[in-house]
Image 1: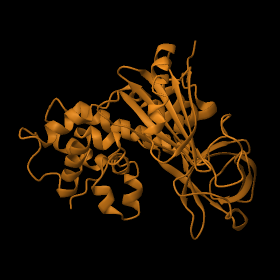
Image 2: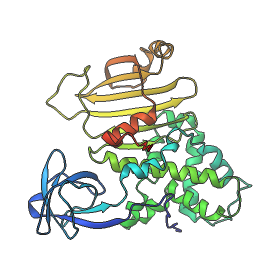
Image 3: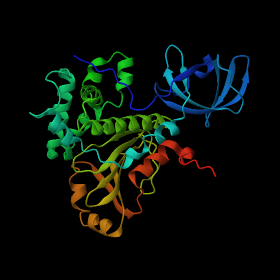
Image 4: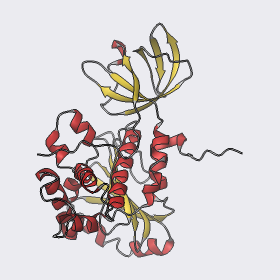
Length: 349
């Protein structure tokens, strides 16, 4: 197995210190790699009171932090102690370097055809078996539209994108890391860099896209959400968003049973334009909503109001609604990830 050590496409934020929660703070619902925004409410004697919006907790630190200072933290450990890393570059600034990729097309399949074809610019065996199999596996899956649209291959495809590559390496989970698309593309870039090959720029762009979604997941970690990009050949661009705890929808009655589960597909399609599809699963039933870019598109989808729910099999579709007024996929994602940091244009006169 050959594992490529991943140099990030942009300069990463370097941890400049750590903050350790005291014993009374260890019962809070925090997860490894979760991104936290906090401010210093009090500071005295090597301890700080962190204001995290919905709660305040005391922490110990060797850093000189000032009252009112805003911090961006990442949970590094949860056992045997809770440990935060302080980032020196704000998340919004890091995302701003890659934001141009949100509206770009993946065009992954044509690249895979070249890299795995008879005229491949790669030296035989140079990537190692796991990375080579990752490229072949993605090519086969993306060439089989029936597998993708039927939902059979898509979960495995998303799992192997490599959005947790660095975390897997840190945990010693080298097999899953080596078999990821990101690791394979890092190996391809290492092979082609300096060769002047026409595909180098495309490989760099794909790596930047993956880095962008990794950063977005850091921001989404505040509420426990997760996003996966969709490098599908029939989609210009888009992503799948899973909410840890769905927000109540007007069509769905409040329930005291199992928590709601919500998935949202944000898509830019060649024929239909921007489209969002919300799937809210609650009490064994499904609430399905399409949010379209225009009235003609909404009217077109309404023509399939009987056929689409029938394709979902045994799941009961409680409501099927089609409305207009969708945000672009990029705007919707940035709004959720950055919140009040959403405006990233800084001008000076």
